[in-house]
Amino acid sequence: MADAPLYAIGDLADLGGVSRRTVRYYVQEGLLPAPHGVGRGNHYGPEHLNQLLRVKALQEAGRTLDEIRKEITQRLQRRTLQPLAQTAPEPLSRSLWRRLIVAPGVELNVAGNVRLPSPGKLEELAAWCRKHFVATDTDEDADA
Image (tube, rainbow, N blue to C red; front, side, top):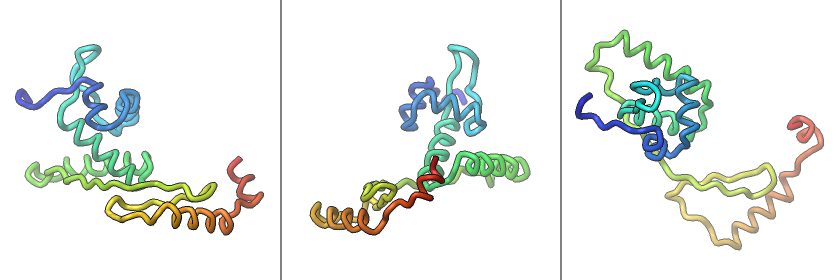
């Protein structure tokens, strides 16, 4: 671990694309291991960054924090039962997606490698969605 980079909480948060508060919350919730050291001397290593990126990727894939926590717990349990040679970290896959709100309560998610239609065509789609996706009173009561 002597040659491994060490990160302050702000550096880890910046590299992971989250806030310091999120890092602290993830540690509190068991999604990230506790930092090395205590107080102002605490620091994070590459294992923290890898885990943070894994949590973010799973969130972006639509997983809840509870589901992610269960998966992390299961992975840790499997690692304790397997030889170390078989526990290489899984590579993270990330992709860029665009989120378009086309009507109240309706959104369209488009992969980054898909070309969007012209603004005029997008407006036609939004108008169609506003016309055909209408919130009902029972839907609004369920949200309250």
